Length: 193
Image (cartoon, rainbow, N blue to C red; front, side, top):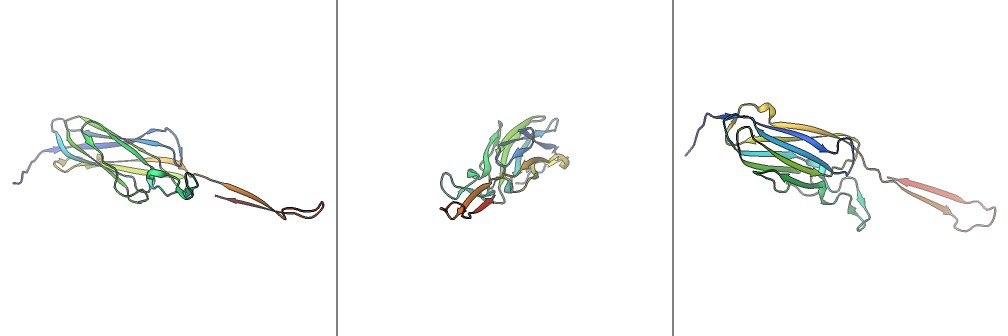
């Protein structure tokens, strides 16, 4: 049986950064809010899928490794994805892709959304970046059950200004280790990021 409906609705999404307010340092915690709204005055919308493409923002191995707790430990354990806290009626399983994947996507579902109602989904990540700059992130919302009369508000993009993490190591060596008074010494200074 195929059910055909001439009903239309307008599902929209707005993505914002709720904290912190300003630029971040690589590895800081960032909270996004995804607000999905049924802009229809009389139609209940079902079968909504919300997609937040996180991609490389939450890779565990970006930014190199550290020596604690063990040598070679990833700088961002857990892949940089911290949590997704869906509001009433939404379900958000863990994002696709592994901790070091360049294609991590968070997909949430909303079974039913009443006319003029909204659902908020809080997404917390620890983005890490190898180069300073503005990093854009896009989320979309669509219903598989009903025709959307306004595709213009089905996606929302927000940027975060991030400063790359710097981890300088300085080493100074002297040669020879022992010398007589007045004998020449050679110092070698090495700095690496």
